[in-house]
Length: 109
Image 1 (cartoon, one colour):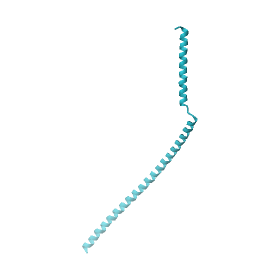
Image 2 (spheres, one colour):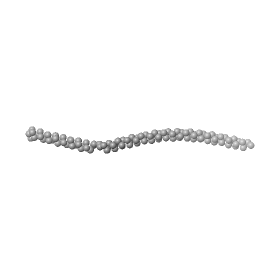
Image 3 (tube, helix red, strand yellow):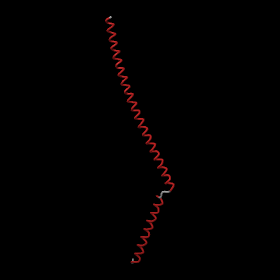
Image 4 (cartoon, one colour):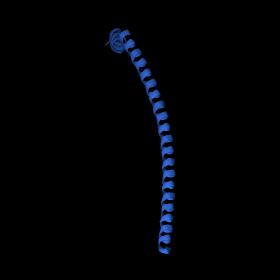
């Protein structure tokens, strides 16, 4: 193979490599290109996601408020229960004292 044939062969190989590279680039670009319809869809999905996040944040805030309210009501109910139990204990003690006083009064009289 002389020098001219070598240059021609190398030129053809480089031309084929260039053409294959350009074709591969075209294919990749063709399949990864985003259309206007897809952009519109992505924008609507982004808006819907944003609205859903806002609704979620509002729901979380509502649940936290409700939880604090219920915890307050529970504490109040527990305090009322303790007061009622203490009152019942005092009433039982007074009842027992009155019963004992009545028994003593019966035995004396």
